[in-house]
Image (cartoon, rainbow over all chains, first blue to last red):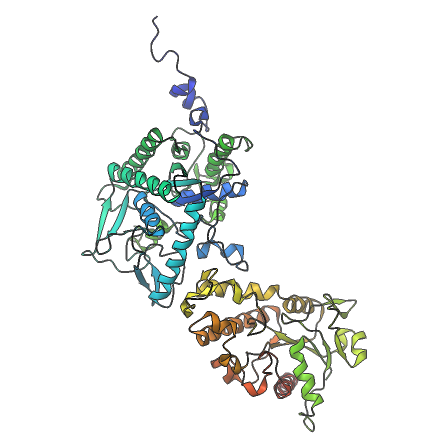
Length: 364
Length: 254
């Protein structure tokens, strides 16, 4: 037998030893970080729904997650999320696409005009770029604009202070306002505003477009921080699309979306020393796992899955985290399928996308 | 009917009404008083069935009238009036933690106001009740309800003096272009929270002595001290005592 490139590969390179024989937690030696995140780092979190879990767990574990827009001290803790506090490092809500993030960062640094986009909602007004952040909206459009101005000040301070940005890529699909050139977090008419087919167009962002946005985002941060690097830790949300406007089957659209996002994250990681990727997507969406990862709706990620992801994350980045254990989640098993269990509900993750369900067609 | 007024300095107006003879010849209650200063309400607890001041302020000993009221069991009273709860605006002299939670954008914070945090109306609404429940007067009210079986009445902290609106140093006016709108909003939230709390605790809430005042949430200047715009004068106290008397009489007859 001759030597060949495969003969000296580690166990992690082989499906059988790295996946098939490892049970619910694959061998994680392959996700050794490029650089550690320490408790001295100043971390900003942003992205789609799944990033909420990451930010919260990091904060709970004592990492320096910045809260640039803290809640009023007398607002009860259980009401924080309802008003957009403590979900991410700023009150920007879910940032589903790289383009949305780039847009926010450009706005915060004055590289594009501050948004004036205001939607009407039941006689009150909301920020079109974060329409669910204030649940009852404001009395006037000018109040919305004032809130946005304050918000952008805080986001600018956040981005100047953070030396690590944890960003979860969530979607490729988005809606663009042709009048302003802005992309929106939700389709107009779903939670607020009105849908005008002449004004809004659907976009399914390509690899090249997302790549360009991510590179631009990295460049802006470096420039604005006067050369000080903001390390970027990328993840891809394992949460499937609630609905697609692409005309494709939602499963096909989900696979396409995740594949493109994963490819961009991989390319960014391979191209830049200060960009790394954490494989929460792979850990959760691994179809060969012997424990359930998703709730009965096959979309919500179970608390136990988040625990597993973050346990691995802590092991990798602090060395002091709990051992990576995927609980069998017996309580979550109902007729062979996990339920949308109480633990999941208690996590109370806010997800604008879920609102699409409420405004979509009735179940047949 | 034996009534105790357990309160803060707002209760002083009730005592003044009696002292100034404003109720002479009228068939209104003559309550005992047990009061200690503090805008957030009396910091009392009940120990061995008696009122005790928890946060004794050296320069402001409790005012007890008649003196033997300090040794009476609360159960000796037919009713207790807690006076006054629901302090939400410090006016031009004092700071209040509730208005300092953030600026409400709907009321147009001024450009030169150092905004620390912009909040929505609904956020302020969510703050109001829990913030009030942290105040010493509400802590006492809850304890009183648990240990006292008689009727408890709550007098709301008076709306600020209408004079406030003329004062350029009124903090609310310095903060907002629409300071009158904010004042209505703030006291509207306060009144709603007071109603909810009192309902939940099974205590009776009095309205302002004249319901018409709730429209703009100010008390006529003639009934309040100009020195701070927050403390009522004797005539206001007389109105409250008449209110209390009418209320208690209605409960007896109904």
